[in-house]
Amino acid sequence: MYSRYIRHLTAVCSRYIRNDEDAKDVLQESFLKIFGSIDRFVYKGEGSLKAWVTKILVNEALKFISRSGRLDFSPISEENTDIGDDQPETADIPAAIIHDFIRQLPDGYRIVFNLYAIEGKSHREIASMLGIRESTSASQLHRAKALLASKIREYINRRSS
Image 1 (tube, rainbow, N blue to C red):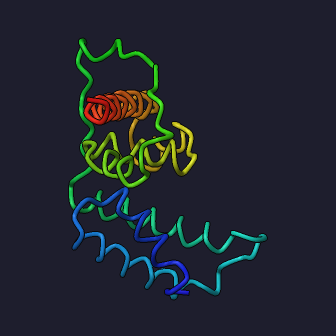
Image 2: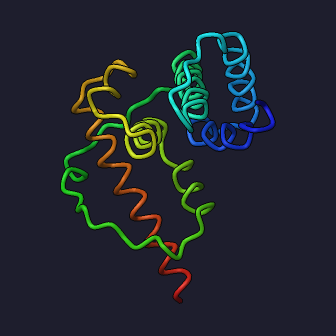
Image 3: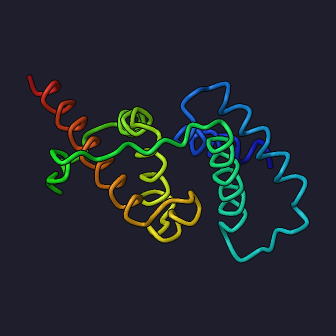
């Protein structure tokens, strides 16, 4: 199981945890939890084991962030409230570059973005998981998207010059 899922879980973990040493700790804790609770896994079809281990890892990453006091939500000032929703084209940008841009986001933005855009959680679920208001989740996502769009546009402009 370790060999089968370590690459996937490492990639997921690195979306939440920036520091490589901390990510290794979270991965270790996650595998301990996975192996210690495998008897509670219920097969629900192809992909259910991968989804189950991913859920455990995300929960462990969020616990780590919460325990370490790194769960910081950046306020959105008045000048940041009117951010357009136009999204630049990303088809020609390597996935590793996009991943790096996501990792560079401030903690609150990055965590909400990952939970919403990648894990498919609703703002209600995110608010419950993180102990925040739904509006905080929505505003952090909005700002994360704007920062990512800005980084992507900058990358595209640098490449085309």
